[in-house]
Length: 334
Picture (cartoon, rainbow, N blue to C red):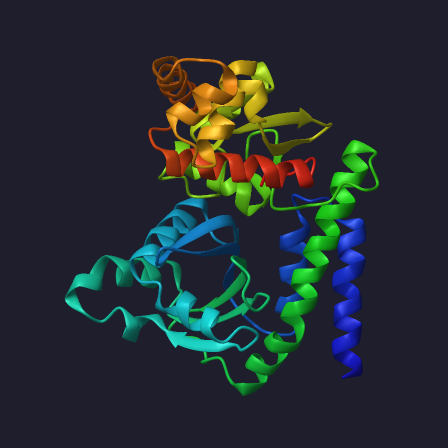
């Protein structure tokens, strides 16, 4: 146990000293001194309607082409991810050559053979009931010895410290970059390099981007979004009632998603009418309250729908609910 604590202390020292763009590589190199492996994927994500969404992906000793292929394979064959999610904190060993032995899996099998990923050990570090968490997948080639019980035990003991050390590193890097000691990673923030390479991506930022770019892989910001943020500093997404903004520091970009208040997107009269309409009041009742005709109320509701990018009362109710939640948590989107 003493050696485990010393290794963990090393992770935290790395978190304090390393810049955000090299932390994972330095930490995984240290892990490799205890658990031998050829390459690794360290990623954050969660399941949405049965499909795994990647919020952040880091490939260690893997070229970008391999990372892209593995993201595609994981979406088609999510069994290792699903198994790890079902038993967080437990290291699971897989043999990709067996898992992808069916004829329909030949492209996936060819990928793992090409990059020497046949033997895999994966673990999830995620709070019970959380919408997303961190995964680490270590790889060995077919010619290497299988992962054994000692490897599983070490990974189980060290993974929580790796995950916590990365959170500490992100907090320190954000604070140093912005001179705001209270600034920390969160669901509504992302940190990237100047070329858009993602270092940290909260789930709300991921959702925002995925809505506009459904095929986004979580590795680098979509180029149209990056260019617009660099040129204009922010952009809005009407359908979700949110805006995304960017602040540039010396070697990084801080991305923040915030709710846009309904009152800022509508005229005073439109806001008044839709607030009543969203709570279930009918045209006649609203007309009586606001001193308008029912036909005028109907026209205002339809015009407000167009401004908000919605088309029914259920969507309006959700927008109102999100706005109320955001007003209770300033700075974050609801």
